Amino acid sequence: MPKRRENNTTVPKIYVDTCILQGGLSGRNKGADIVFLNKCKDNGWKVYSSIHTLMELFDLARERAFLMKSVIKKWVDVNTFLRDRRRMTLNNSDLDDVSEELNKFFLDNKFIDLVDINEEIWTDVKRIVETSNLHSSDALHLALARMYQCQVLVTHDGFFIEEGNRILKEVKEYNLLRICDIGKVEQTINALRARNRKASGIPPKARLSKEK
Image (cartoon, rainbow, N blue to C red; front, side):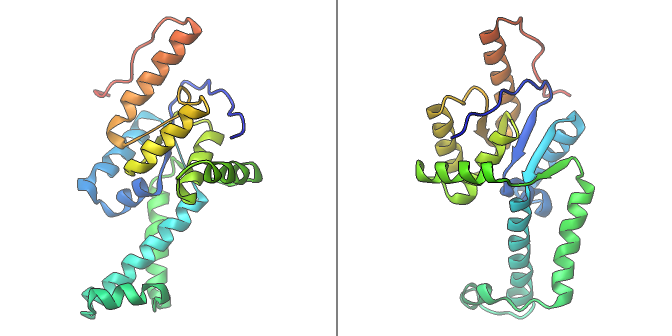
């Protein structure tokens, strides 16, 4: 992995995995992802994801639309849906609805910055895939979080959390960036701040408060 630049910002920088934004769109997980994204917005935290995430969301939204159209409206059995989902038959109106839903979500959440992917990031992705058990999409999210100097990468994927943090420890970046679920974001940011301030000899400051 290339050397990651030191992160000196006092404002938390958070990279969100596709599953977090999917939850924000659908309201699944009892709305916990919506609550988390609203907390990021209200606290002024910098939130990043990528163009790749947007493409993944389009894939998921099209599959959901095809599911609704096939299984629910046409009573197609689930096995037929699973067989046919790789050759979906959504019409222009269906696709417009998908685009409108996603565009509205990002217009309503302009604080989420969809970042580009450059050659250096692809090089990092290749190294991560070659030296770990991460799926290529997760490797891309990790490489992006490193490049944009995020302190936390948020996901619901337990294996991504475990394997990603192993990689960060191996390359000695676990004190700069950590991967966790939404319920541990503030705890993780506080731990990183305390660790880095102690290492630099700076007196401790107030912790992030859940009461904000």
